[in-house]
Length: 305
Image 1 (cartoon, helix red, strand yellow):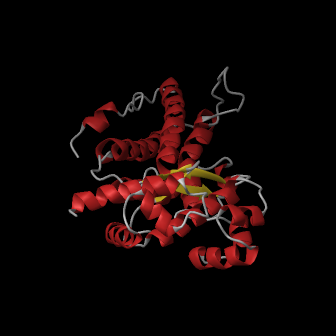
Image 2 (image 1 turned 60 degrees about the vertical axis):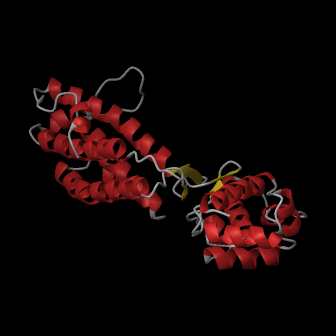
């Protein structure tokens, strides 16, 4: 068979795997037969294309789904184990601990990344599917990363020009009929920095100290932005460069913990940051500081890389 034919067979195998993921009685021979190949031939092709044998891929995907279930449901661990195809809690615990480095009960209390390392790039994708990595990648680098770069830069510029204001001006309430939270230039700028810091903490599975945003001085914001901005931007570059926008991660800071995609998280940051930046831009203009205008990313995005 040609390389293209092998890849087509592998794609069909992934589709079958997704459709029959809960059919624990389906044997490897029967799985190959449904694709009109021998088990030997299917094993050879899947190993060659994916870098792991079919049964190992299936076990890994089932464990990834089990990890997702532990984060997003309160189902007893024995139920999660049975759904993953294990006949006992002990067998599930051994397999999960080998894969994730920690027992299921401990992982549930402090979850980490759901996806396990896999040369194939095939993972469990909530709520219940498998996804092949793209054969031809459409690189959203220019647009998405430029928008994040613009956000980090503009946040720094807003903090800079806000230094021209008095404490009274920084802390003057910004009136919004549609928002009950009292907001000021200071609180909004602190949250713009803190939003990146919060997600950096979530991605590193560590706590975020919300107290730093309580009446934070501008100098402290600058220092935090110098750390959190580049760290957040580096994460965006990494997931975009490696086509990982659809991969999921666990935000253990939520109560209860939640599962998000990297792309969804970035979209969330850009959306809510745009709202806060606009409020800051308008408030700065009200105090005669208007050199940043509306902070529109249009010209920034249009600039050559």
